Length: 309
Image (tube, rainbow, N blue to C red; front, top):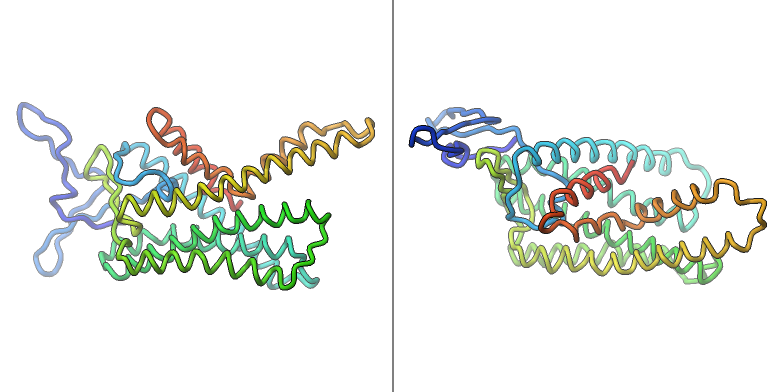
């Protein structure tokens, strides 16, 4: 729930007989102990806002649906990611392979991202600038770490294909972990020092439904860091998908004809699994412009909020 001043919560939604038609749909006005009036609203935000352009108007209906999808997706993702992490750390008895360890790091980053996204609204409603800046920085770090581990997964996959599964790099996991966690942390710290984190508003066609969240407040930082960072990751991971799929199809062609049954269906599932595991689905943010903006936003939200399931 997010608090607005009465002037920003009540809206001018139309005219009736030359007089403004005001409404407080979705909001409740409350008087505090000091005689002030606040408006308590029950609107959250949607997952696609992490990469789609900020400060652009969206319809209240789309905001409602996207919020519901985001909450359900992030909640389910957290549950399944939590189960996976629990099984790995508390139940697993054998030593994990390098591939499993890298996947666990990705799961940790995604769990943190989903968790911070879900509690972001609770922090934003407190209207505490420092708290909101810290919240934004942690969520941004977790998102960049998720991107980094997408790239880490792709790098590991390429290295396995190249070496035949025999990776001989000393302290390989330690090195890749240090890079994929430290780089996002450095970026988040720099942006925090520049004062670019704070309360960001998502505008709707109904001002009463405008939503605040703790996020990046500078549109240029958003484009340069978020879009730029993911663009580099996307180019690498998408190339990895193409290389891997080509290798898989080449491998299948070399097999005997008697193993053809069900290969097409398995191939489709393999490609879809690779795209999700390497974060290629986040690329739908690139289509969130013009006529494709809303459809791409829905696809992005559905695929990526449920990514951990």
